[in-house]
Amino acid sequence: MLNKLLNRFRKRKNLQKLEIKKQGEFHYKVFEKFKLYTHDLACITKVFRHIFERDIYNFTSNTDSPLIIDAGANIGLGVLYWKRKYPKSRIIAFEPSKKAYASLVKNVQENKLADVTCINKALSDKEGKQLFTTNEKISGSLIVEKNLESSYEVETIPLHKYLQQKVDLLKIDIEGAEKFIIEDIRNNIGNLDHIFLEYHSFVNDPQYLSKYLQMFEENGFRYFIEDEFKKTNHFIDNSAELNQDMKLNIWAHRL
Image (tube, rainbow, N blue to C red):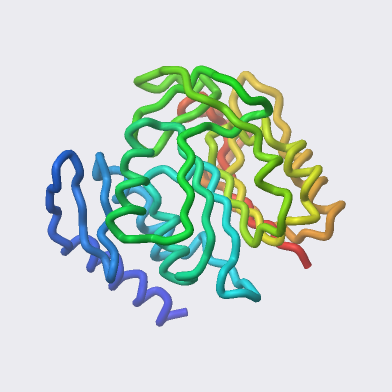
């Protein structure tokens, strides 16, 4: 345990020491063998600890070329994390934000990552277009109640056609739109081994967490839940962040 804490501390210090450089419209920092490119430094500083220090996307595969679906890839730090562990992994990365997607593609191209498919669309329950609200940093959603600084239409696509084969890890961080893809996951859950889900509860919308948990329980998954908001008393504290009253990280894996 002590060694793990020391390693996290060293990684954090190493990132803080890294020189920020500029290449065209992008900032970048060199971390180990990678260059971390971003259109906005907040995309690195606010999530680096969770991904590279806490290892929240870590999983064990019985193959050196696992298939990973990254729903809500942002600038691609998760993609870089998995390529660091599984260089031969195959990754499909969805990101609807215009600026985050440009950074995602930059990270894939400049770091010469093979077998990474980037898709500039939002996952939903239908193919078409929907209004997307975003701060063009680390938050963007089809749930317009989130009411971020910018809004524009994005193309949407269902998830089911990407789940027709064995998927070693499905990571879902789509800021509330996870409610649109439940049936696609349910209908193809036999092909999934590991699922990381960031669940968002909005104050004016019905909650649907039980649908995911029931699906996991009925299909032989063991799940673990972490509350990001960490309120001390939910009866008294009714505060919300971007109209969200709960945000959970859920790890589910097949037994």
